Amino acid sequence: MKVIGLISGTSTDGIDAALVEVTGRGLESRLKLLRFATYPYPRALRPQLVRLTHDGRVGDLSRLNVYVGELFAQAAIRIAKDAGLPLSRIALIGSHGQTICHQPVPIKLGGFKIRSTLQIGEPSIIAERTGITTVADFRPRDMAAGGEGAPLTPYLHTILFHNPNRPRLVVNIGGISNVTYLPCDTGLENILAFDAGPGNMLIDGIVQHRTNGRSVMDRGGAMARRGRVHERLLSELLRHPFLHHGPPKTTGREVFGQAMVERVVRRAKVLRLNPWDLLATVTAFTARAIAHAYERFILPRGSVVEVIVGGGGTRNPTLMQFLKEAFEPIPVYTFEKFDLDSRALEAMAFALFAYGTVQGEPNNVPSATGAQRPVIMGKIVPGKNGLIVP
Picture 1 (cartoon, helix red, strand yellow):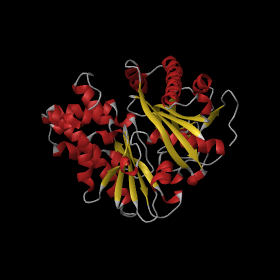
Picture 2: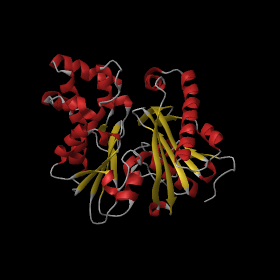
Picture 3: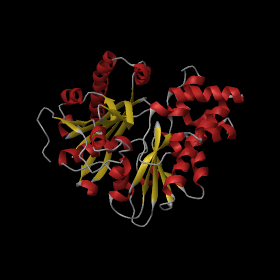
Picture 4: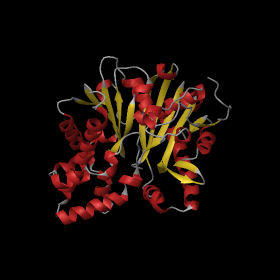
């Protein structure tokens, strides 16, 4: 099947679209990336999405759900066109949507333990505009089974990177960073995966604050490269409670978003840090938090022979250098060493999940999310020709 995977991450910078050819079933599935692109959000939308995570109104949420759905539909149409394929050749679309709120820690409400998550980008819009069966809203089913609804990509990491002779650590650095430990043993039950802490989110937030919104990221790590790491502030950041909670665990903008940016900026003023030293320090924090996750929670189970890194963070050479120093002497590679596009993996994952959903194959990883059992994630919106029958 040719399947389109769509996602917008916690950085809220645009829509990642991957056109993938998928064969096989379950863990024997094989993926071939045919085309990948990122389609930026309209400039005015990003601050609306960020604001919605803090104080959005119900009316705003309802409208943006449809608006983001229209943009996701456009992304699907464009990636097919860019690949030179008519939409009639696409069997499925798997859409993660845009996360607005993720609350994996249960609270008691009416006698129930409630975990919740909310992604917008209405799949009915995507299916209607493209005519293609669309599978979306993957996280809630895992949460209904007692999981945290994330991380989800370990399923794909296992298919792409498991090696019976080489234990590996797979790292994805998006807005949030997550890690997947792949021991030599086979089987999803042996996988350990969880969010490690901030990825690009805190770095981007500091850049936006310091430039009054003129820049949204430290392109190429150039700003951080001009500074020096302030060890005292770094030590304070590494005491963040999330880093010391054992897995399963997931996080997002609620923990490492604007509120933390403001706290870090205030602390930097007290310490009289210049902007370059502050950026160098928070960049080092992302790298050290990933290494801490490995040392604290994975190394007691077994060491790895290599670290394989993907996601937008790989485009920040300063961050990658900090990561290599933190893991030395373990070698650190990017997905490109394995002929994969670092940027495309998350979108590819949701193409794979959609493929598994219509085949009736469980596609979560309970050992990573904490779910009580494997479940089939995703809600199906039929295309113009009805449901796909695998």
